[in-house]
Amino acid sequence: MKRLTMIVVLVLAQASAAAHRPVNLKVLKVQVELDRAGFSPGVIDGRMGPTTKKALATFQKQRKPKLAVGPIIRYLITPEDAAGPFVTIPSDVMQQESLPALGYTSLLEEMAERFHSTPAFLQQLNPDARFVEGEEIEVPNVEPMVIRGLPSKPAGETPPEQLGPETKHGREAAPAKPKVVVTVSKTNSALTVTDTGGRIVFYAPVTTGSKHDPLPIGKWKVNGVQFNPTFRYNPQLFWDADPRDAKATIPAGPNNPVGLVWIDISKEHYGLHGTPVPSTIGRTQSHGCVRLTNWDALRLAGMVKPGTRVIFKK
Image (cartoon, rainbow, N blue to C red; front, side, top):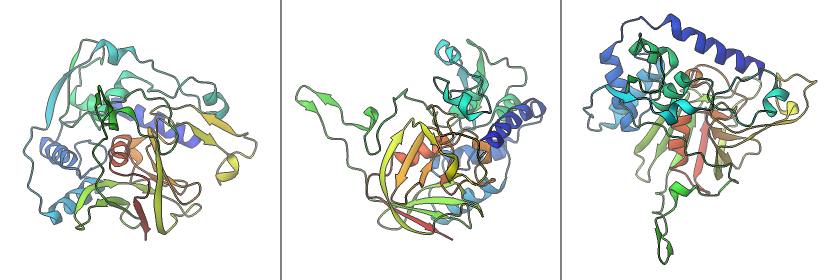
């Protein structure tokens, strides 16, 4: 847990160093178009890195029509955006447990995640910005990630925005989710969702396991989905935990260790979930679970249901 906090601090510190680098608009356009097509490059940072290259190659193999969108839009920071509340997150797990929520640490971090990016890249796009209420900034032209402010929900319970519309006769049934299969490749550090015809309808980079906590290769099923989850920290389940630590319940929020959503599967103690540090996806190791950016995890959660097949392969 302390190592994770150090990564967060390092990522935010790198933002100022990158603020005046020129933006590669050609690469940015590719990343935005991939993101909108459902072939996520991970964080949008204007770099043709490994996760972007893999997403582009997968998209091209599907021979889908190319989207034509501008890479940048302007966004006005609202009073609601600036209201936070923003928090200082201590490295100590016991101190984290005492917080009301693990929210964003700054307005810059909030804006970066909303537009599938990093603090460093937003500063690169807006070198003179102060990131304050009423300021207009340039952001990647993606579908913004919006946190609904949902309370934590038991696994399998459907959040309000996924229910059907309310009528005078009660709530209508929501459209049934199509049958899909989720496949995670350890070798490629990638997740795909395929329809009944075998076509890829969603792709995202992931972080999977480590030599201490390897990805459990096999066939599993989704038990349910929990939005805005708390995290039950048990040092006995982590090889790198401080043995002096006690069990703790870490509050919900985008900086919770499992991010904004937990997709529980039939393998005990394992799931697919978000992350507080999106720039590490596909680049670092996890404690056996499958980790995605928060925006990709939320998109995946909207495609699965109890009983959805999940395949972990080498």
